[in-house]
Length: 75
Image 1 (cartoon, rainbow, N blue to C red):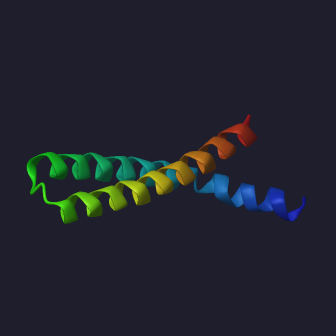
Image 2 (image 1 turned 90 degrees about the vertical axis):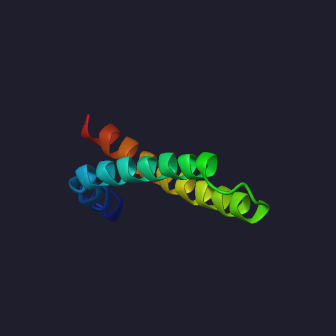
């Protein structure tokens, strides 16, 4: 077993936690969208919401890639 396989074995062991993190990130994105709709529509608030969407999107994408790789390796 090389380092690459060992890394993904460890990551696959934590797959349920990564799935939970993906659910939490999705929930935070929904709450951010609700805050944008119901909250103040100033330019500053809009810019911060877009930055938050960007951070949540990159985090969610990273988690989805890790989960996809773990699932692909388990088959």
